Image (tube, rainbow, N blue to C red):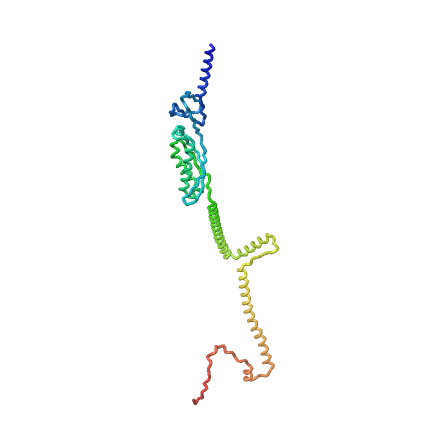
Length: 319
C-alpha cells in the first residue's frame, strides 16, 4: 500500500513538472513562434496562456513593439565635397514574426547595419544644403532604401530621421560669413527701398508746397512748434531760401522805384524857382539888347549824335 502511494506521489510530481514546463504565457505585445521537432508552425500564437507538448514543442517570443534604434555617426563627403559627420535614428517594428525569426538570424543587428550603409550612401548623393535644410526629401530616400530589405525580413520601417550634422570649424566660419553678407545685402536693399519711397513722398510734398506757397510757411511754423516742445534753451529756426529771394526781389523793386521818383523831384523845383527869378530880373533891370541876351543865354545842346570829325586840309588853295 505504501508503495502505491509513493508511486502516485511521483507520478503527480512528474505531471506537475510537465504541465509547468509546457505552459507558456504570451504577453499582449508579443507573438509566439512554435517549433515542433524543429519545424516552425505557420500560425504564431496569440497573446494569452498556451500549452505546449512537453519535450516536443519549443516556443520563441517575438516583440511586436516599435523599436527605437539610434544609428551611429557616419563620416562622409557630400556631393559638393564637404566632409560631414551625420547620425540618425530609426523606428521600426516586426509585422511578420515568422520571417523575423526564420529568414534572418538577428533582425535588429541586420537593421542596424543596413541603416548605417544607407546613411553613408545618402550622404554621398546629397549636397550640404540638402543635409541642413532639405531633410524631408532625405528622410524619404532613407526610408525607401531601408524598406527594400526590411520587407523580406518581416520588418516595417515606421520612420527614419537625421538627428545631427556635424561640420568642420572652417565650414562653420564660412557659413557664418555668408550669412552675415546676406544679412547686410538685405539691409542695404531695405534701406535703399526706404530712401526711394521717401524721395517720392518728398517730391510730392515739394510739388504741393510749390503750388501753395502758404504751405511752406505752415510747415515752418510746425517745425518751430516741434523744436519748442523739447524745452531747449536754444531755438533753431530754418529759414527757407525762397523767402530770402522774395525779400531780395522786394528790396530791388523798392530801390528802383525810389531812384525814378527822386529824378523827377530834382527837375521840377528848379523850373519853379527859376521862373520867378527870371521875371524879377526882367521887371527890375533895364531892357537889354538882343546881343547881350544871346551872350548870357547858355548855348543850346545839340541832341544829335556827333558826326564824323572833319580834318582840315593843310594844303593851300594854290597847291
